[in-house]
Each structure stands twice: as structure tokens, then as C-alpha cells.
Length: 210
Ligand code: FES
Image (cartoon, rainbow, N blue to C red; front, side, top):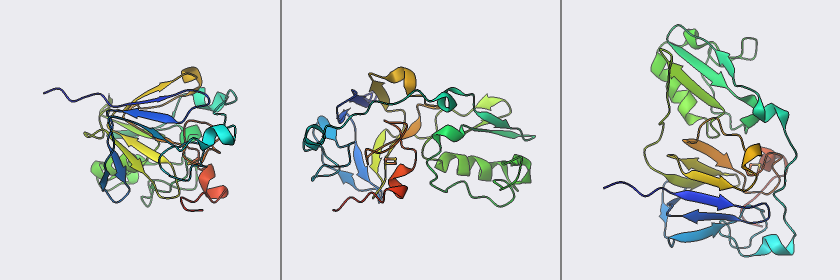
């Protein structure tokens, strides 16, 4: 049986409306949800992760400024077998790109051929929650990283979206995803690249509990 396409729908001033989607805690526990439910993205709900209407009270706006960096092509770091593509503007500084000798602090920032095994590079790229990192092996782009469509709530952080959940956004021209397979959506309301997370939740010390 063909699986249902999960969707997340949003407008400039709205929360995230999830349709036919499954919601998980970061520990992998599935939360009971109806077919359609609203998730907070202003950061002010008293019933997080769900929306309680606070976005209207605080006059939340998801409007964003044009961001040229988001429209730049990802930087390419070629290896003999695997090439890593890096769209730095999408990075939320989660810190998962950690493989000694491969992800470095000097140019070129990524050196795929320093890995012992190609799989190690691919595994790290898969862990990049925003999709800022992607990879091609033997010139074939890896497109389907996650099988199951999921919304994962990162404690004190964003929503990690996996498995190709469709994002329907009324400002879509400024929402640039490298891959629709997985991406991170802002939950604190303070990102500069809304609806995507840019890591600002850390600097504002966003907390689930008040
Ligand atoms: S959750 Fe808002 S910037 Fe990450």
C-alpha cells in the first residue's frame, strides 16, 4: 500500500499545520496526534510543542528578509569516491559533522579522502539535521536518506523533519532546501531564516519549559 504523504503547511503568521504526520520525541517515543495538528513555531506556546494560539497574542510574524546566501549553490568538496556538498547558510551548528581529518578547521574545510571508509563520511552527512550537507557517490546524488516520514521534537531546539515530509509554505521562494528528504524547522520563533532553523535557539537560550 502506498504510504500517505505527510505535509507541513504554514503561512507567514501561522503555526505549522501537520497533516498525516507522525510526531516523535528525540528519544524516539511516538506521541499520539490526530490527523491534523498544529505545532508551535513562535516559541511562546504554553503547551509546546503544540500551538495554543499564543502566536496571535505576541503578534508573531514569520516574515523573512531576502537572504542571498541561501540561494548560493552548495560548496563542493570532491573526494575520489564521495563528494560532500555544503550549503553553509543552512547550517544550524548542531555539531554532528565530526570526523577527524575529514571535517576540519582549515581550507578545504572538508576532505573526504581522509576518511578510512566512504561509509563513515556518508553516515556523518546523514546526521546533518538541516540537510546543509549532502553527498554524491560516484557522481550519483544520495536522495533518500530516511525511509520513515517523521517530525522529531529536539528538546530546547527545532523540529527535525525526516523522510520527505512535504513543506508547503506561502513564502516558498525564500525557503531554500537543499534536500526535501530532511530539514530542520525553527521552533523558537527567532531564526533569521524562518521557517528553517539557523541555530539561534542556542544564543537566545530557548527552553521548552519556562
Ligand atoms: S529553533 Fe529557532 S533557530 Fe533553531
